[in-house]
Image 1: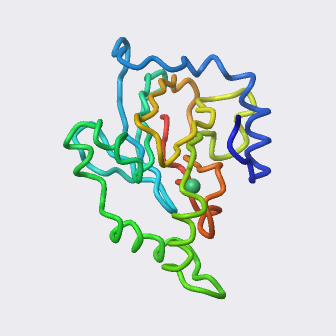
Image 2: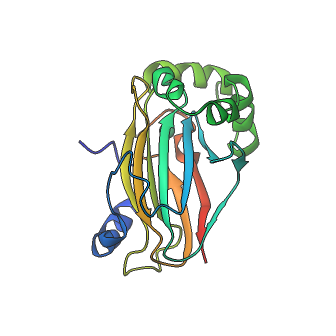
Image 3: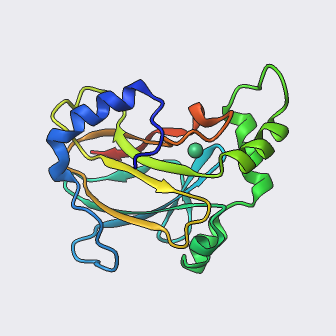
Length: 196
Ligand SMILES: [Cu+2]
């Protein structure tokens, strides 16, 4: 089952992406053949953290065209999945409070209620996220790199590994497509991956 799709743009992107599926070489855990870069993407309420192989958080990942990117994604609340990550990656994930503070930097304040209460509510009612990667602007009608949404439930026991071919230049957006409470519409990184 696909997670709940709320954004109309995503539907457009799916339509655009079908022609470009050759960019997606599927799920090959344990295979390192041909991988140029590996990134770790943690989903939290309400954002993503991108960490490189050295355990450094990155605002943006730059790739060369035709690089093969391996994306290891996880829900930061999925403790078993997080425990299975390399220590350097685990340690790069900020704690719950630090992640909560980031919300106030990039999400407008709610008109009623407060962030903290809404976050508590989201943790209980909507603990799951997902991750999709799609072209930031819908000009790549021929396709481009795209990762179809993967589910990142809180009870996951393992991270999700995907390999993607960076076949098209441009900026790509990381996006949560699973409704996860108040901040869900802001749970994306526009231009988080750039292929030059
Ligand atoms: Cu989410």
